[in-house]
Amino acid sequence: MTKNKKSMTLGPNARSFQKHLEMGLEAAGVDINDYWPCFMGHKEQENKIGLGILQIVDKPETFVCCFEDGLTFTEGMTMPITDEQPASCLAVLVLTSILSGRPIQLPLCPHCEEEAHSKSNQP
Image (cartoon, rainbow, N blue to C red; front, side, top):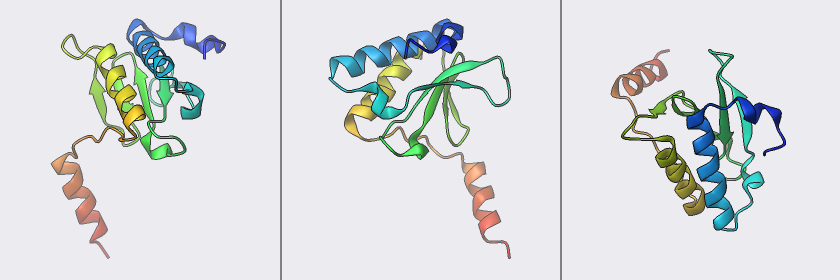
């Protein structure tokens, strides 16, 4: 992963996430490359670079990406990075999900769930 030049553009939070995740997987004897780590540009803010990774091998729906401001999921939801929830804590969550085979499940937004349900019932 360190060969990719974009890694140099990660901010301190995303670099912390990367470092903790890499160290944890290495300590567990898990090859990080099995989880397709990659550097990603943000779709709305092109100057934002994050580290993306699968939580389960060959399951793209478990993809997450840590940007400077938080961990983004394929559904578009984000777990923010804060003083109380630093990037290292989010890395531990993703590390645990990888090692346990149980991806992080975000709670569904009641408004989004209601909207999706109403759309599925339309003719």
